[in-house]
Each structure stands twice: as C-alpha cells, then as structure tokens.
Length: 431
Image (cartoon, rainbow, N blue to C red; front, side, top):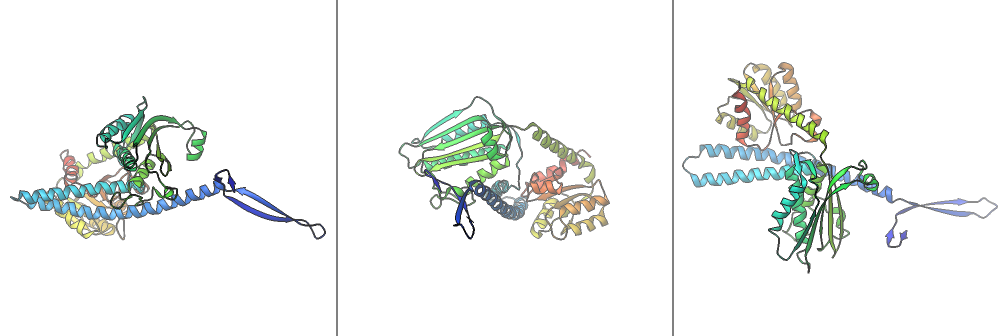
C-alpha cells in the first residue's frame, strides 16, 4: 500500500462470510507489517555481522601467529648481524611494517567484536577539536569546512585510538564525497544529547541517557538507495578502483559498537550524506570494574619475580614455526627453555619437571587440550605456578572473558621481544 510517497508493507488476510442460503461475502483484512520486517532485518543483520566477525577474528588470529614468527625471526637476524648497517636498516623497516600490520589486525578484531583496546578517561571535545585542526590542514583549499563544537567537555571512558579512527574515516569519506561539488562543504557538529522516548525505544537504551553526539555532514555525491544498506559491510565500496578498500565504515561501526554507541546515516544521491554518532558518556561503574581488573593484573605480574629465578621457562605452543622462533628468542635472552607441542603435553611436561620450571609461557588455541584447561590442570599440580598466556586474540575480548582469563598475565601476538623480556626480567629483579 502507499500513503503519499511512502510505501507501507502489508499482509493480506482473506476470509468468507455467509451460508448456503445467503450470498457469501469476502472479507479482506490488511495488517501493517513494517515493524515485523524491521525486526527481521535487524535480526538478519546481527546474524550476518556475527558470522563476518567470527570469520575476521579467525583469520586475524592466524595472521597474528604468522606475524609473531616473522617479527621473532627479524629480531634474531638483527642480533646476529654485525657490521652491515644497510641490511640492519632494511630489517628495521620490515619489523616496523610487521608491527603496523599487527595494529591493522587489532582494528579488524575490534570490528569483529573479538578485541577491546585499552580505555582511558578522555575529553571527546578536546579530541574532536584536535582531530579537526589536524585534518583540515591537509584538506583542499576548495573545501569549506564548518564546525560547531559544544562547551561541555563530554567525558568518555574510551579507547582514544578507536575514536581517532572514527573521526579520520568519516572526515576522509566526506572529503572524497565533495571532490566534484561546485561549492564543497563539510559541517561537523558536536553536542550533548539526552535520549528522548523515541530514541530510547529505537536503540533500546534508558530514557535520559546522555551521549556525546557527533554529526559529520557533507553536500557531496551522496549514497544510492541500493547501496545504503550495505555501506557497513566489509570490503563494500562505491569508490573507483584503488580509491578505497571498503573497510573504513565497517571499522567505524565496529569501533562505535565497541563503545556501546550507535550510528545513524541519512543520504541522498546528489545532495550529500549525514552521519550521526552517539557515544554514551563515561560510566563510572564500568571504569571502576576495568581499573580493578588492571590492578589485579599488575599485582599478578609483581609476584612473577619470586617464581622464576634460576629456573626454566616451559613454552607450550602448537605452531612449529612460532615455537622454534620463541624458543630461540628466549635462549638469546639467556633463559633456559623446555617445550611442549600442545596443552596435554605441557601438563605432562610440567608434572615431570615442576621443580625445574619457574614460568609457563602458553598459547591458548591448541589441539587436544587448549591453554585454559592445561593451565587449570597445571595449577592442580602447583597452585602457585605463574602462567603467561600468548595469543593472537585480545585479552579484553569476549572469548577471554568466557574463558576466565581476563586477569591473567598476557602478551598479544605479535609482541615486541623486549616487552616479553621486560615482563620477565623486570619482575625477576624483585626476587
């Protein structure tokens, strides 16, 4: 059915009235099913993103394993290299690029919902003003850039790097969109927003919840009606070949959702686009919980010193290349190392050599027995043994929460070799 220019989806129910004597009537009933279709679409979108998230998370985990081996071997090559400065510089570049790739993978895992970057107290107003100033310096002089920033600081407990990604991707997209506009204009607006009844119902939040609302609006080419439902899909883009990879908006959506925020989009071809980002203001209770976990983790690290002096490290890692590289790195740092190929073998190795082992360095995702279960069984042998988990997944991810590993000592692959050394050596100084 249509109401003006608006089309309304309906379901039609037909029934008959009457009997053999009287003439029958056909009753036709129309039911507006707009809400049902919206709920179905939302459910399908949630399921689709969950599948994509699991796929991205799995790929990212494997890539982190490969990067851990690459960066480890680069470190070993550099310490063996003497008198070849040109070669050493090339290795430094390769190492830096490898860690840059690790950062990109971390963003992909944040998008997939399997990673949560470290958070801190941030003035979103200050961050937006700084980002706008830095970005507009590089904009074409033909683009008119307007901004309207509120007086409130808008305190967020957030991952600053993720917020910067949101701003940079949206500003870049706006700049790309207006490149062919006669009078190119980008308008940025930051305000304090309090959820009204309609917003609360639409986004399932409590009424009067306060948000930092960021709006980035342009008068560029706009997004087609057909493309609009897909703009947050990974690798989807309407830009010319080579102009974009189609990951920017998917990362924006992942970062917004990571902060329990919402994103709304309005766009019309030839008239421009408007992106509204809603980020909830600082939640004091959430910050206290996260800080408590961080304090407990630091306390665990401090106890490590008393466990390792004069003893070996048990390395439990199923990836042959990663195990060989990590063993060589630890030996180059003058640690004694024993190895096991999976959790089951690690438990047996610890059972036989527990008096010689001061620390267990353990992967999490392994065949036969994963790191979580292996750690549990090792601590049944010795409740006080210290375990450092190493994984391609992030410590703050939902996967870690489910495994009960949030407060364990942890290094994320690919890790800086000196970070591994400092975690062990720093704590050993107190023994």
